[in-house]
Length: 457
Image (cartoon, rainbow, N blue to C red):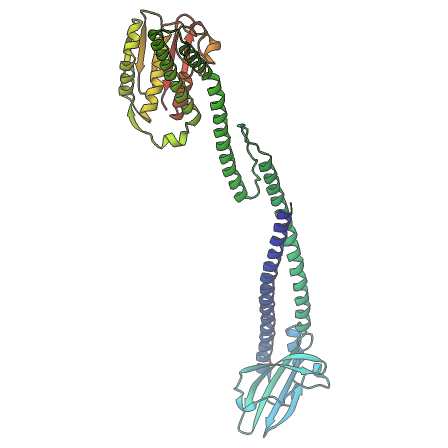
């Protein structure tokens, strides 16, 4: 992709510019520092030599001056030493080292009037074909004359420094190229991962299936974006899946009541029916409309419930009071089958949740227990701080049905014609309990009964 190649080229150019600028500044400062240290070391050497010679100087000029001993002592290849006498504005050389041969150190620039006794003055000079670093020091003076000690060494370091400067430039260029090569490798690898991520994003289809993009494990910022994108795409896929389910469920379950309503209307359009038959038709239509409304509300809840949105409305609720209200609400239904409640335990329990939703979940379980209980039986209720248990002694179910009991539109086969319902109650119940992080367990035995146990977190 051109966009990634252009991005890489821009990054490399920017990095090269910045790196070259930084290294140029660093190299310049480093070279200046090295040059200063060389100058300082040369001056320190000349200072030591002058101090040594100054103490060995013998004022009787005819005595030999041991310049060679000093040169050997400090391991100097060539040492230029010269003793100059200044008198009445003229200079005369009293003595000089063998290394000077037919040359002499410059004396014309010596400002005798401003020389201080035993203080050392440095200057850069040139004699013959080479540059020197020279030090001057006044070692004797009276009214008529002054004796000046001059020491110098070749500035061979100038050539060394020039070579060092060239090597430094070459080294920095090699270092910059090496860094750019490494960075180019890292950027290329990162951009290749980014290109791959881009291709994976393009290949994702909104089909309700789970999709996720693998993290690069190279760039934390990109991995963070991938994590956010995975979250968003999964939310989108979940919403799409619920829309699909809603459409499928609606088309599956709404056909029957709509067909009944259509048939009733067709009958009502006949001419030869009585007022009583009209009234019965309208009653049947009203019942089916109520059924439609109930089905639509259930489907809307199953397709739109979002955990994070519902959790925001959670508050402390009293489970014991909620369960008591549910039992009272279903008491009249239980009485139609002469079913009684048996309370085994009923502790006060407080949990965080949505009272209305939990009321629906508990009511569905109690309603189911009554619906599938035998006539003249009872339902056992247990409530503790760890769980709530609702146990009936009815038709029960086998293991195969237990695995399907929470599926939408599933109804127990022996009673699918005698028990009213749409097979959505327990699906809604499970959804509500999952939203509250509650766990539900079912144990059942055919023709003996069923136990629903809700475990609190």
